[in-house]
Length: 229
Image (cartoon, rainbow, N blue to C red; front, side, top):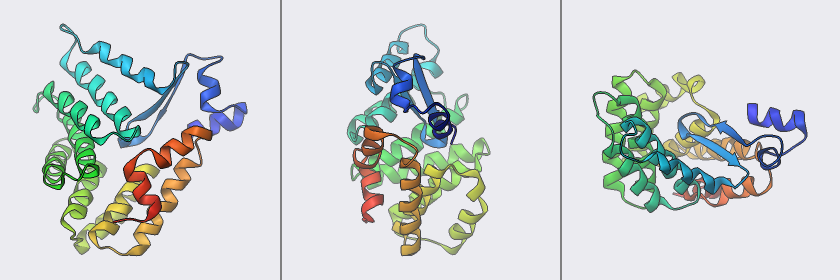
């Protein structure tokens, strides 16, 4: 919302702002990470991997790979995303970094799913839910549960009730993902249509090539728009 408001107030796109008065623009996207716009382009996010060096705190090194994984996911490369999430998990202590473990597993589950590795995706979804419960991340636990339900093709009534209970805690993109997963789990076509509407609403806040890339480069987004699976 703030990113769209900034464009409206300035009359500039995020790309234009990132290459003129400011060095970069970061738009946070809830559990789905962030968009980072820099004068050198979004590929500049890979410069974060310079943090992956001896002497750098493990959590910072993990963050660098998590962001690189997000970039690979946004570029449509699920296998590279999984590899980066693997590296992110490798730097984390499950007891000390439960919140970071949560997001690494949840993102890796989504990437495994996109690559057709359902067993691995289901295992990561279970781990993500476990970490979410540890840190009392109610919305994240729900996202992990609905992904697990989609992978099983089973949608218990309690999950639908939970979806309404956590609605206010989800970002628009998280809500789109949850609705599509519920449709995959067998909740009905209304959830599929709602997911597409939510995703397209998020896309409408982006400009030009960013909107196209958001809808076309990410396999899961293409699936939502097409109403597939």
